[in-house]
Length: 129
Image (cartoon, rainbow, N blue to C red; front, top):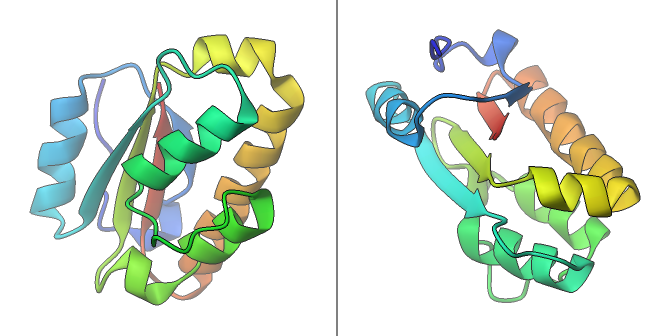
């Protein structure tokens, strides 16, 4: 699977991903973007999802582990970094299937964050595998 030009904020957003994580990490580095990976393997509740997101996204220690706190955290310029960020969500299928409503909420938050950063001309990419 081909990696898009990650430096292009206008094209950034939430995308499905079936390629190798290494290719995203390499492309993120080449575009001077932070790379984060969230592994949802074995995650079976919203609490576990929030913990996985907090850890994988390297959210601040004061992260409140709820939807509003997540939205606030990923729209914080200190968290995003100077140039932007690439996030890979791995092993999502079981959680998506078992917790459709939570997944829809998470997808909305990530999509809104991508739009927020796009308006500020900073790339924020989320790849869902």
